[in-house]
Every structure is written in C-alpha cells, then in structure tokens.
View (spheres, rainbow, N blue to C red):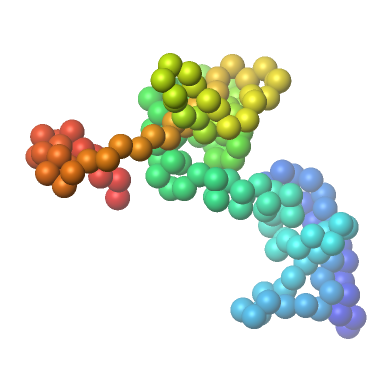
Length: 152
C-alpha cells in the first residue's frame, strides 16, 4: 500500500469538504499527520482553518474569561452554542453571532482592542480588564464579608 493516501473529508465543525492527504508521517504519539490542499496540518475532525480558530480562541480567552462571558450571556437570556470569536449563541430560538473585544477604561473613555465588525450583530461583548492592588488584610476582610468570589 502506498504511503500517500488522499481523500476528501467533511470537517465536523464548519461542514466544508476538505482534502485530506496522509503522506506517511506520524507524530511521536503515533497519530497520523494529515495535510489539506494548502499543506496545512489537520487531524481529520477539524479542518486546518477550524483548528486555527480553536487554538486562537483558547489562547485569547482563558477558562476564567470564558466562564465570565458564559455567565453574563446566560443572565441576558443567551445560550452559548459555540465559543469562538464571534460567539455563536441562541436566544428565543434565534441564532446570533456576538463579537468579543477586550477593552479597558481610562477615566471616562473606553478603549477597545480592535474595531467592531461592520456586520449587523445586535450585541457585542466588551471584556474589561483592570487591575487593583489589595493588601492581604483587605482580601481577608472581603472574603469574610463574602464580597470576594474565588473562581475554582
């Protein structure tokens, strides 16, 4: 049997048909390395484009950020279907795409990391980042008063 085997597979995430070529290469763990038509690697479930988006989202939003976003959207009646950027959520039987931008405040001005898309998204999530310095005593007082919530 030839080491080069080509076929077309459907990406289970985006649904596109993508070339799936195995050229006999394997990773150290024994899994096969597949290439698409542009020579980008993929495992066979997610095409290279979907895998790139998944990795970028994982790097961009850590578990803490994702939990905050999910709670906020749930409080507003959304159910997150796909956590990517834009977030795919459902509300009242309608699927919508919600872009996420990191933001910070400086006085009264809000600065976002990049412009919002020009599409017709009816909502946008601004994920604010801030930093404050607290003494150990202040943190203990907030914990005792139950005004400090620890994400675990």
